[in-house]
Image 1 (cartoon, rainbow, N blue to C red):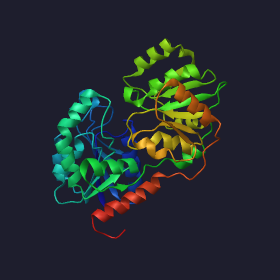
Image 2 (cartoon, one colour):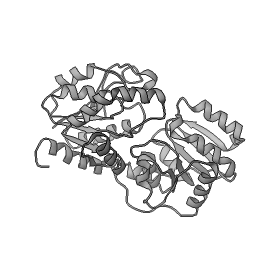
Image 3 (tube, helix red, strand yellow):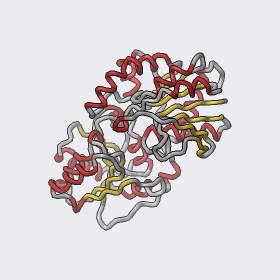
Image 4 (cartoon, rainbow, N blue to C red):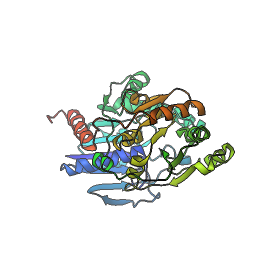
Length: 352
């Protein structure tokens, strides 16, 4: 079967959507499907045409103010000219989904929205407001809509009036469960993700003044790094905070496994992939009770906070540290690929 994936960015670009599309594309390829990825990130560290682990990748240049929206009308023609049996577009919050809908024609059209509804950026919110009629049409145009969390599924119903199938993200189970923990003289907390204000790392940094027994490792890069440096200095916790920058796929599981607690205070998430990764590595988590992160509250090993004051975060971290390692099964990317195959084949009205 020929499957076309359309996404704003694709590895080596990093991020949750990028990881999702890579993992399902490579797993579908391993099952004998012919997978092509069309993406709008040409000029950002990737070749315009290449093969990555069996997946054909075609990159197009886009207009992306401050890395947003990836306006790329050429995707419509690329989708229209492709010989794909099914078109699968990702990420409501960027225009390639809309342009792929324009080019799909009568072929089955599957959308995974990765939808979180809003943004902490006023500019991004303005762009999303202008884009909403087009994005709404594209989502409603889909034969199948996929949500990565129950929270997202309910939000899609309320915002777009569509019924979605929940297919949660997976993790590389073997790599995470077998990781050798990083050992340090002092116990450390970990947070992972792009350094932007909405990710809420600043709240964890401020809480470190209440947690003198811990260090904080921050894995990731982004435009908010300098402000986080300043907050650490002003709070008097610079000696407890270490910025790791980009961490590769070999080292990251070791960091998860060695951490006492994984912490995320993000404002907006459709799922919370780093929480799944931390739990698979055996590390308790403290999350913010908001958007897709709220789906994790009932999971063993997860504590949640309703406000981001230093006192509340610190108390939750101390409680999580006394709860012991999480237990339970973990969802693999192979599981995700199976579920998505069923959804894709359903869109073609074939038996799986």
